Amino acid sequence: MAWPSREQAWDILNRYTQNPQLIKHALAVEAVMRALARQYGEDEDLFGLVGLLHDFDYEKYPAIGEHTIKGGEILLQEGFPERIVTAIRSHVTENQIPRDGLLEKAIFAADELTGFVVAVTLVRPEKQLSQVTPRSVIKKLKDKSFARGVNRQEVYDGVAGLGVDLEAFIAFIVEALEPQAAALGLNP
Image 1 (spheres, rainbow, N blue to C red):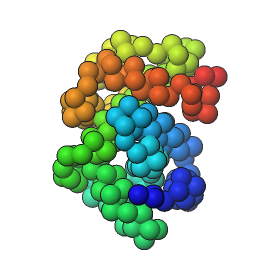
Image 2 (spheres, rainbow, N blue to C red):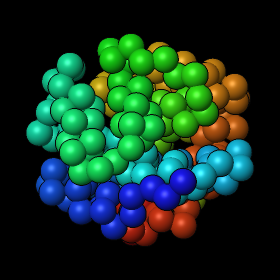
Image 3 (cartoon, helix red, strand yellow):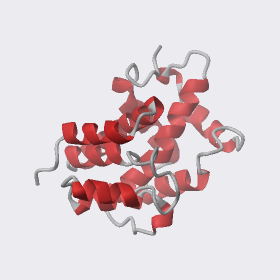
């Protein structure tokens, strides 16, 4: 199937998102989703679009019950297929959309943990992604005062939903982000 273009998705992201950190988060999750698609033999463009757009409406509609719901309406009006909209909506637990497919499981697993890996990188003295290890990320996951906004249960549930080991998935995320590290500000 021919999906909307990445350029169209990029335009939508930038129309609705002004915060540079949210744009970097979108790019990071896109990179991880594309890597997951390659690993599982899935459609890289589909997975990438879901990763790039998963939080595009967050700045304007951050409230539970609006985030991804309003965004989904916007995407449908822009001609995006229901497949992409459903996957994006599924990453918000409160929407109660089953995560039966790999696409839905992937975005749920990638979102929180990718953001957490970036946060761990940014607090390190050298701020280099290449210096982040699964062990250092797991240690920070256990520290409830670090990155309090990250729902640890969703991190664990996401990894379990994908059927992967937490340590291995952290290493996978770090590897997926490496080519984008400079653009993400993770290799000063």
